Image (cartoon, rainbow, N blue to C red; front, side, top):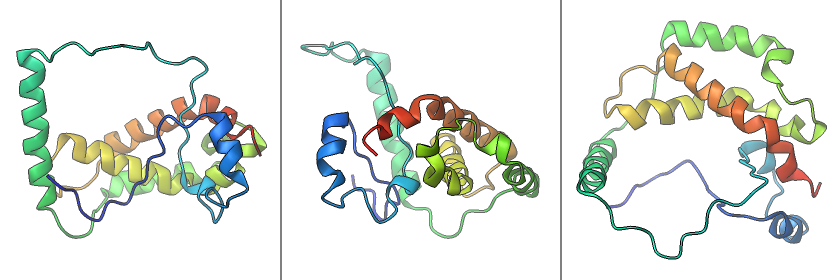
Length: 162
């Protein structure tokens, strides 16, 4: 199964040492830092030598997700936001103190595009549950905003090399 025309990139498991090493190679230049959401953890997750086999319930979830992705592959066209969502996001964007929850200057470029981050994450939230092109709702935008704000608490730590 293939997902075509993806508009997201993922650098997973990157360490601060790696980010420092690639800083001078321009991999992270050209605006990537402002277009990225960095999830930082002080402690590594538990290390598991061999994952447990999936339960019957987990196997069914895996099949359900594969079926959902097949439906998503068939979608085409613009994604609309409800009027309520657009109005809320427009008002939210006007209040810099509400937008910039972490005042660390390393996040200035990120916050310059937070309006786009919220919309893109709201779209992901929408399509995680729905395989239709219905409008993205205010509730989905609020979930996206909450997810971003949780990540922003420690996001500057991932940018310690700058």
